[in-house]
Image (cartoon, rainbow, N blue to C red; front, side):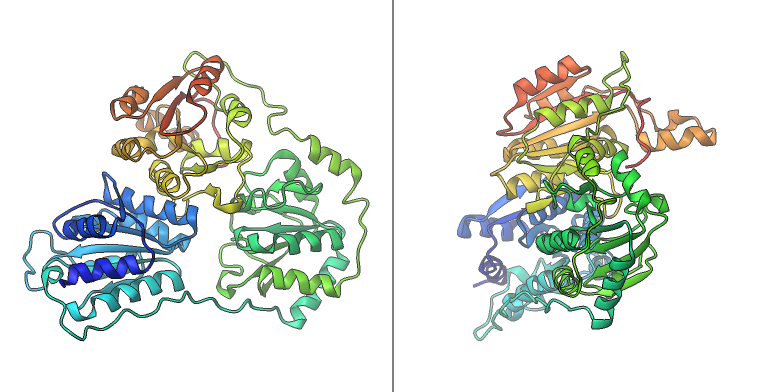
Length: 539
């Protein structure tokens, strides 16, 4: 057996049935072996950076370790932004990267892959010899699942053809490390109980880290008379609760903003509290903030908190509930507030703009709210355009149904993450929101979407430029033409690459496009020309 075959065997032994990537000299025969001998599905992207994003999207949608492969040198170098996104998100992912022969430092594609991998992915595992190939694959998967985060598994091209000697080192067992749920100290519980008793208008704010603790946090809110809210990445966690305010942060709706402004205590559970969650200090400026998180390093790291408590969200909520006498707060949890929450309409008070150049993006999102399937995976890319679906569209984040790859602030993420999510969860359609500038950084992945055939509706909100830059230029007296571009027929481009597409310029056209594009059973694209003068301040 050759080392390349041993690597393929070890990869499959870790339950891998899908791998994303782009072929090159240093990985092509490994991929061929995985496909032909093991039946692994290979999703071929048009760009290495997009391939890693697809694997990341697949992992976020499925909860499994994503796998992707690229070739040596430029293949790995192109993937740097995507690896950084995955690292900051803590996505378990193994990138199998080919490498040039160690004995040929003047190889045209040679560059120092280890320091590059450490600077981006943050972890590097080399296959050091044919005898250790299976072991090294196992070490990579173990590192990816235990950190969690991306790991670059480095495989020199010449090593792949070398024979595996008898007595090769076996692969280690990969048992994902699961630390015990940390319990808060008695002093911390006592302080939180005291703060809840003393508060007049408390709020419990849950983030993605508290998804498994939803019932316990909800029970504590009912017991303590607090109202509930979530971060955008935990949207829908308390859906149906009469005192659930919805998403807090820069994307908070008017009612949520008004109520949070009155809060005198905000307790966060598993929330990445940052300047966006606090809306730069404007959201709950009069409240004492207590943060509960399993990671002590996260407490107050991105936004100041008055008290940090190290503890699992569920364990902490149960401990506080057990020590707390039930509290009634009729002036805070009032029937009037419940009625307001039940009747709230995110589109109330919006004066829609009419224009010949396109549709008001808010009017289009209102149509989306009525026409899109409730059971879907929602992907929102990075840019001003993302503010509209994030603010106005109810997209549940439970069951890994909301993917927001915003960690590195990189544009061009919407389409590749949607492809990965669609491949990983074909049982529900994917609706992805992307901007024209973002899409144009990776048009080739429309071809990938067409070839894969995943159930993805790509909604391109086209304002003819980089909207965020246009909005920021004007107050400084800079000509926004620097960030504007000519109108292009993106629907025609999509159709030429095999994706059915419709152009939307008004509300009537949007209705017709949805009539023809729904249900989402395969690739679809709506090219929505939106009015550039309608801008989103918070995104």
